[in-house]
Image (cartoon, rainbow over all chains, first blue to last red; front, top):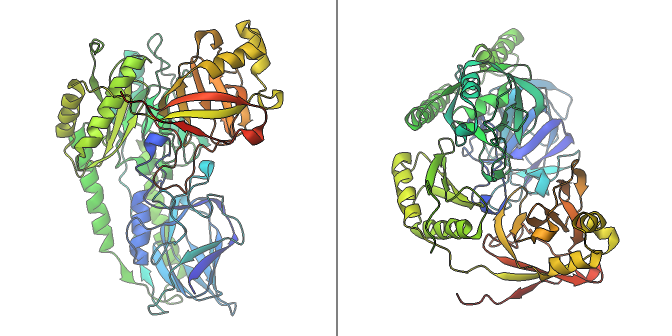
Length: 344
Length: 238
C-alpha cells in the first residue's frame, strides 16, 4: 500500500506544484509550477527528492496533514514551521528548513509562512500528472488532485519512507539576495512616454493586496502610454512580464499567467529575480533596474551557486529537546532578510 | 507572396528566456500566414533548448532555456529564419461545429441583431455562412480566436464583463468569434452554444480540439443535445 498525507485542514493558498507544465502554451495552457522554484528545489533536496518533484506550495496559511499507509519523510523550505502531534499525543516541533519522518497516524500542523514556503516529501507527491506535470491549475482543472482546491479528506499519495524512522535533517535558511528587481526592457517599452520610462526605473513601486498566482498589481506614479499605446494586438507573454493597462499601474505576471495578453509590456523580470517577488508582503516597496541578457545569465549562475552553497549546510538535526526553543526560533526569524528588497 | 510589411520581421526580447518575432503590426491573413509558416519552419529545425513556440495574430513567441542555448545566437538564427519568408501552406484541419441558437443559450443575440440592424435569423445565417480561421489559442486552455467575422456583425464587447460565461458559449467581439472551453468570466457577446468539448486534458497527443491554422464553420442545430456531434472535413490539398 502506498503512503499518503491526508489533508485534515486545507490551510489557505495551498496547492500541489512542481517545475511547471511547459510545452502546451501554444494551446493556451499556462506554465504554472512553483512561484519560487529555488525553494521548491531546496525542500526537495532536504526530503531527498529531485529538484522538480511535486511539493505543496503554501502562500497564506499552512495545512494540517496526517500520514497514512506508511511513514512519510517531510521537509520544509521557506519561513514556515510546524509541529508534529504523534498518535500517542506527544508533540515535537518541526523547524523551518528541516526534515523529519512522520509515522502513520502522526499529524503535522503547519503555521503561517512568511513569504511563500514549500513542503516536500521523499520521492515527491505522486498525484496523477496531467499534460506532463502535477502542478495545479485550478481554472482548467489541471494537476493537483482532480485540479481542485485541496480540501479536508483529500489524500496526497507518496512513497512510504524506507529509511531510519529517526532520520532528521536541518539546514540554514536559503536567502535570496536583496536589491532592485532586475528586468530586461520591453518588448513594448516604445509604447510609453520617455517620462513614463524614467519613472518606471527611478520611482519605488508598492505591492498591493491584489495578487494571486497569475500576477501581482503594483501601485506608483501613473505610467503614461504614447497616444494609442495602451492596447496592443495580443501577443505572447511569460511569467515576469510587466503589463501596463490604460490605468498606468503595472501588473507583474506570475506562474499561472495566461499565455497571451493584450496590454503593452514595459519590461520583463529576469528569471533569477522573479521568485523574490512572491515573498514580498503587500505594502512592500520595490525598484526596478534594467539589465541585459549577459547580466541575466550571471544572475542565473549566481542563483545556482547560492543553491549549491546552501546544500552544504545540511546537517543531521539535533533531536528535539536538545536545543533551546529560542535558538530554533532565532533561526526561523533569520528569514526576515528575504524582505531586504524593501529598501530597494 | 506579398512583400513583408516595412520594418518586419523584427525580434523583441521577452525577458531572458523568450523572444517574440513579429511579422506585422495588425491582424491580417497574409501576416498570419507568415506567422504559421515561421512556426512550422522553426518546429522543423528542432533547435535544442527551444522549449515551445506560441503563434499569435502577428507574431511567434519562442520560449527557450537560456542555460542550454546562447540567446544572441538564437536571436540571429530566428531572425534569419523569419527573413527567409516561409508561408504556411493551407495545412490546417477544417471543422464543422454544431451550435444551438436557442434564446436561452444565446442571450446577446437580440442585442447583436438590433445593433447590426438585422433580423435575428439573418445574424444566424451570416454566422453559419462564414468560414472562420483559427488565429491563435490563448486566454484559457483551448480558447481559439476565430478571425473572419463579417463586418456586418461587428460589435464591441460588453462594457461590464459577465462573471460567468457557460462553457461551450459561442461568442463574438469586434471582428472575432470564439467558443469558451470553460466556465469563466468573459466580456464577449454570447450568440449560441455548442456541446462540443474543446479541451480534454486526458488526450495527451491533442488536448485542444482546435489549432492555429484550422478553419471552422458552424452548423445550426435545434437543441443542445444535438450540438455535440463534430464533423471534421478532409483538408483540401493546397
